[in-house]
Length: 407
Image 1 (cartoon, rainbow, N blue to C red):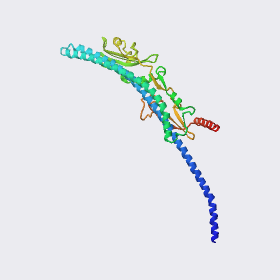
Image 2: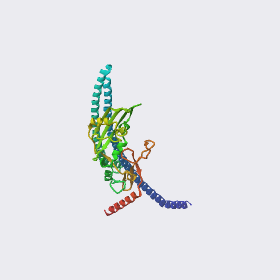
Image 3: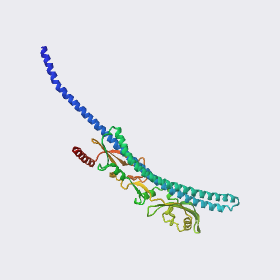
Image 4: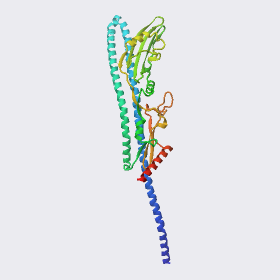
């Protein structure tokens, strides 16, 4: 009986050995597969991080370029405001001077009015000098913006690949080969990114920069026309504004003009004050819509004050341009930049997108803003490979496999 039990236990042990061996093999296979999956996941995570980092840097450069483009618009607006302030102050000083000249014949006011006239003359000269210095600083700042945009283009072109190399090293993949491709998967990233944003100028952009500039002017710069006084038989209209003239070479000329007249109905018109200042070409004509509608209704009655303003206008600086800046004509969503990071066993894609949330930054015209390089609203995002990307990458993998087999 005992021998029979021993024999039965021996048979059971013999049958268990192959089962245990099979289980062990399955376990080893599962462990090996798990290690491979973990390695693939690790490489895929690194590829995702690298692609996203490249997209973040692309978005950051585009936002920096947009900020500088916007700053350049503001800088040009500053020139218009300085000229507008100069012409307005020249007009105001003449009005005050005329009033003081009349009041000085009052015995009690003779000395104070003489002092006021001297002060006005000195302040007027000081204002002109300050405006000249401001325009010099404004022009210097514009040159700095131009150089900064070029430097940003060059620095980010070097920063992106070096950053991705550091990320690969951080993930322990410095020994593995990887590629940085453009969004299509056909071309290398570096030349594609280098030509995506190009320098352009105000004489070759079909008036784009000029259009944005005109849309960005403030009320004081664009239109300084209103009535100082409006009583029966007497009106004191104030007219003025600043104008941007762009010549055939793309150079920008800023001009400002301000006038004020005393109109006595049925009697005469008197020139009370006038002022004009330019940065570039002098004012030669006043159109109907120019300088706050100075050439519009009643322009003939103001002909004398216009002549005085043009005769005494001050040129405080030279024209600027053609203005050179970084931009792109086509910002259709299909043309937004993207990058593909390719390892032997992993591929990741990321790109940038433009979005202006109306709840945070509403537009006055309530029109959905199209992608542009004048508002820093670019952001990075991971993207899925398109069927075209997959087809191209599969062909590339096939070519690489054939090349490796031949070697």
